[in-house]
Picture (cartoon, rainbow, N blue to C red):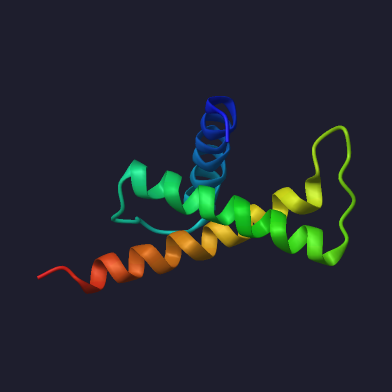
Length: 89
């Protein structure tokens, strides 16, 4: 793993997490670091699912894979926000 791939994962995770958070209605009581972590996990899982489903990798933007990643980010942000709300006293 190179520093470029780590930085790339952080940037992509930030974008995917932010898109997931924007698409989820209501306010989410999670910080930006947790949003990036959820985005990174969603991006990795979305890529794995796309590969298993046989989605072709293209030179440009893989729209099907991107949609999968954003949907997973919406679900992930929703789950994390729900867990965070449940732990408040």
